[in-house]
Length: 135
Image (cartoon, rainbow, N blue to C red; front, side):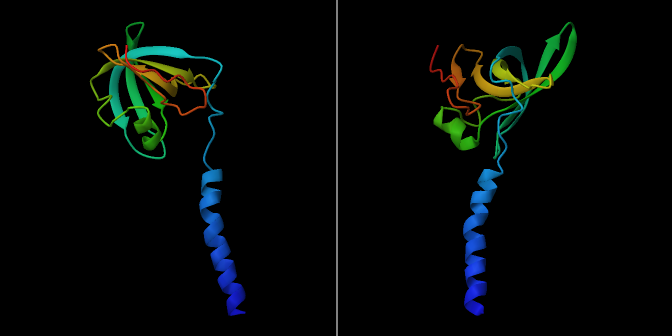
């Protein structure tokens, strides 16, 4: 009986990480057939896992509007050249993204054009996403 209980515990431990990875959300909430370019000022960057989030303030028709953008995981962004200081609060950037399907302001980061013209891509981690080097 103890052996059966041990096997059950080991089986649960082995399966648990796989179920967590399987439960990871998809990019279904974004319209991957469309891209938007948004110019604004970075308000906040959450450089955390499971995904980096970037909040921007955009001037639309004289009104300030906040946009929320989801990026890839920290490890994914690092592979594409990002660091936690690539984009900082106060920076003016142009962000290219796949918009939310529900029309909410924001989307999934495809790449960012920095103030000096450099482009850093791979933000959304979607297969086939644009990966851009220097100018």
